[in-house]
Amino acid sequence: MIIKTDEERTNLIEGGKRLAVVLEVLRARVSPGVTAEELDDLAERLIREGGDEPSFLGYTPEGAKRPYPATLCVSINDEVVHGIPNETVKTLKEGDIVGLDLGLTHNGVIVDAAITVPVGAPDERTKKLLNATERALAAGIAQAVPGNHLGDISHAIQEVIEGEGYAVVRDLGGHGVGDLVHEEPFIPNFGHASTGPELAIGMVLALEPITSEGKAAVVLAPDGYTYRTRDGSRSAHFEHTILIERGGARIITQ
Image (cartoon, rainbow, N blue to C red; front, side, top):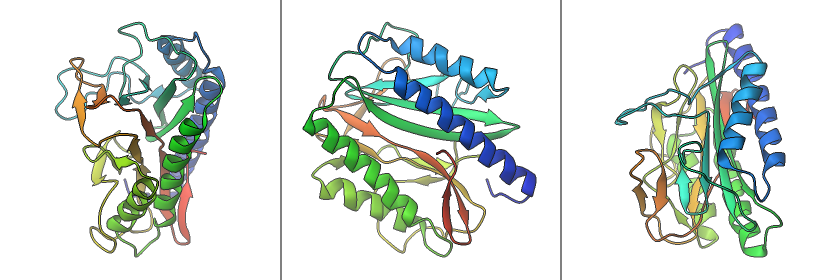
């Protein structure tokens, strides 16, 4: 999506604020004993109460054999992304980490964001993983300025993740967003600076570094959506929708 009108910009910014609020409510709800389905139900209720629509519910991405059956993606520990919350019972336990990925449609404009949250008090190992992934997102956002290239974002993310001793999950990455849940360009979380398409004012992008504590390889579960690390290591995921403006990236979903 390229923002062309003041109305599109207003809807994008408002949708991002609304999504950020819902994610913070979900973050506060994460605790031992809570189920993924409870979080999904809460997300859908909050979005609809605001007069908006869940972007993921019923969405069929390219290559999928069926629509996504939930509002929220809930990915626990070795589940990398797109964990389905409402087809099997998934109960959060002390010491888990849980990725919450959510899309919201406001007046026809789609925004997308994700956080990874510790269940209970995190240990130092967990803090390090989450902090590194979140810092990688910030590094990528800092490179999202007009005249830079997509590779500048990818390279910045990779440097932080690998610099902390983690692996970049290479099969998954960020994307354009706005008119659709997933649009071009695909934004890998690794790459070379000064390569790829040039970034322009008005671009709407969802940046999402995805980190593995072990190796980078992932496998797709039989449900057709949930990706897991092949070696069973934990994974973290943070995401913001950004709008590229003259002075740099505006973070929409905060």
